[in-house]
Amino acid sequence: MSTQIEPLDVALEQLKIAAEMLNLDPGVHAFLKRPKRTLTVSVPVKMDDDQVQIFWGCRVQHIDARGPYKGGIRYHPCVNLDEVKALAMWMTWKCAVVDIPYGGAKGGVCCNPKKMSQTELEHLTRRYTNMLLDFIGPHKDVPAPDVYTNPQIMAWLMDTYSRFKGYSVPECVTGKPIIVGGSEGRNEATSRGVLISIREAARRVGMKMKGATMAVQGYGNVGGNAAKIAHNMGVKVVGVSDSRGGIYSPKGLDPAKVWEHKMKTGSVLGFKSAVKEITNPELLELECDILVPAALENQITKTNAGSIKAKIVGEAANGPTTPDADKILREKKVFLIPDILANAGGVTVSYFEWVQNLTREHWTLEEVNRKLENVMVKSFKDVYDAMVKEEVDMRTSALLLGVGRVAKAIETLGLWP
Image 1 (cartoon, rainbow, N blue to C red):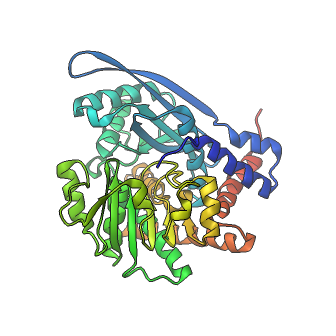
Image 2: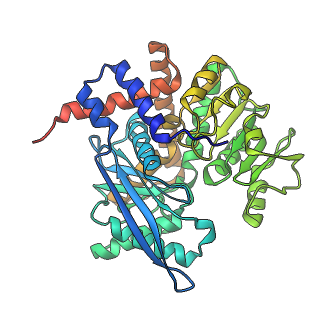
Image 3: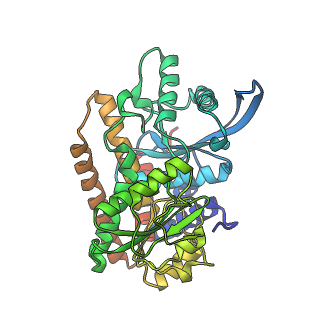
């Protein structure tokens, strides 16, 4: 269920709340409100029919006080500059919450990748990368996958960047295939981080993961892997959905089989073991213990928040809950794990990949998952403890932690000249 609420308005309102509670210097608050650099590009691509089509693209670099910019690139028909600015800001806070040395960035191209061939996507990626060459790099800005981009697209980005440099530079991008420098566990990292956060929340509220019920909105890489990992933890996945609609079964679905079905048909709809098909709004309101919104922004709003029945909401997507909905969920005593904590597993393992590339090492899956577990558990505890101390909700606590760390870095570095 989408609304007219703009993600950038939400991000700025969240920053305002944190700035007031932290008593930030007005100059620092003003500094944090605007990205350091915004680049927009027109990307010409020769399509398979030999016609040239011009795509609009951008890259927003928010704040680099704590390290190089870091953030995904999304290919989606609804990409717009304000949305990308919000996502870049959220990335800044997210990196600070899990205390990794990055600043936030985000990029995107306004296109419909579902209607483009592999050749067209390759041409688009290489041209877009070419236009970003002066602004990205291992110590400047390190892109990663996001909505409708994948390891193959990251490989094309890496190859394009490397060709212009004259040597292989795997550390210029993360989320690559393992064969060209990608990290073990990166594909499932965001989902694994979400489930670690949900497990930690369940411990705090006295819920057992085994036997708990879960619904997942969005059955792409993040939502699909979240369902599979949850299933392996003993959670009963009763509902899942994608952009076309959802399926429901009170006895539970087999996430791996649902994934196979989607790979064959393009949607979760039509899965034979499902009791019935439901809409995306209906999925959000299912009777379940855990809800994982893993689609796009503004899915839980003041219109439907009162109908949410889950006890725990783990935000696998960025910005899926509006501020008005936050208040309603808080009144209902729903334990909401905010996006800048819940889905930080992706950027955490992206950081691990970057470190491995810089040192030309390759860690085992066990080592990556162990390090991820340590980061997510510590970060959850940091946010939870601050929530209890400050007597606020988890989102406000995470923002206080993230914004506070970035503000402190800016104040420590000072302004030059």
